Amino acid sequence: MNAPLVFAPEVEAARRNGAAIVALESTIITHGMPYPQNVEAAARVEQVVRDAGAVPATIAIMGGRIHIGLAPEELQALGQAEGVMKLSRADLGACLALGRTGATTVAATMICARLAGIAVFATGGIGGVHRGAETSFDISADLRELSETPVSVIAAGAKAILDLPKTLEVLETLGVPVITFAQEAFPAFWSRDSGLPSPLRMDSADQIAAAHLMRARLGLPGGQLVANPIPENAEIPRERMIPVIEQALAEAEAQRVVAKQVTPFLLQRVYEGTGGASLAANIALVEHNARLAAAVAQAIAAQK
Ligand code: PSU
Image (tube, rainbow, N blue to C red):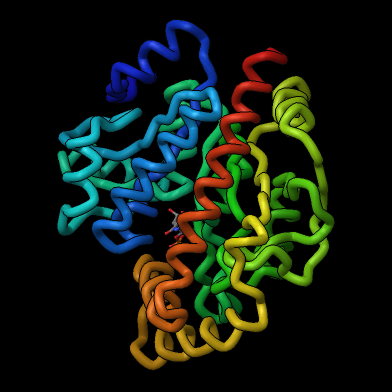
């Protein structure tokens, strides 16, 4: 393979020294949060990773190359850019070939992280099975990527705008380990408890690292979904989220929002419907995930 990768100096040094690296995605910056909170949050998440003893590598596509780690000016530019492509497995190659600017979703970030030799990736929430998928067929490519690409993804579960029971069913069918950190219930992004039991539970970064490395020893392809519940002091209880989400879904249907626009549309409507509280919660949970990801990346480096 001869992928067009370019490493930020901080990431390059970490690779040379065998230091722990945590990949971070960029769709959350361009399509998940408004400017300027998106850039501020991305910079803070990078700092959380550093403070926790690992090196952050925010991934994005610019000028025909996969950037593994962004300079502060690049992050600023990306956070304000118009017409940025939202990239998944299907369009990553096309974006690079055309020299366009692209933000990587969970699926595309996993692909790039693997190319860069990075085992751990922190985000907010993965994509999943959308409600009404039985007629729309709208299932995020994030799910299949988790079954194919050996990266552990630390998220606060799947976004609660999705059909969570169906999302867990598809992950099970695809053979993706779903590990919730330190509780029995699978979390629901803005809320700690989805009301659904988690397939697996682990209580330490060492256990998560050991499970990651064991899959490789067994020759099993694919990664792991590590669901890290949002901190208690930042959560929005499920009862408060349900009507906001229902309203957002009804508007999406009325306006016939489809395909890649669905998730950004719903996140924006939920932001408005909660008077901005969903954004504060989203930022808190990403930072929380970045901290756990740094611990898992260090545990993998130590156990290797
Ligand atoms: N986490 C967040 N906000 C986001 C996302 C994750 O806190 O916006 C992005 C991720 O990039 C994820 C994408 O891959 O949402 C899912 O989009 P879709 O449902 O179209 O696959």
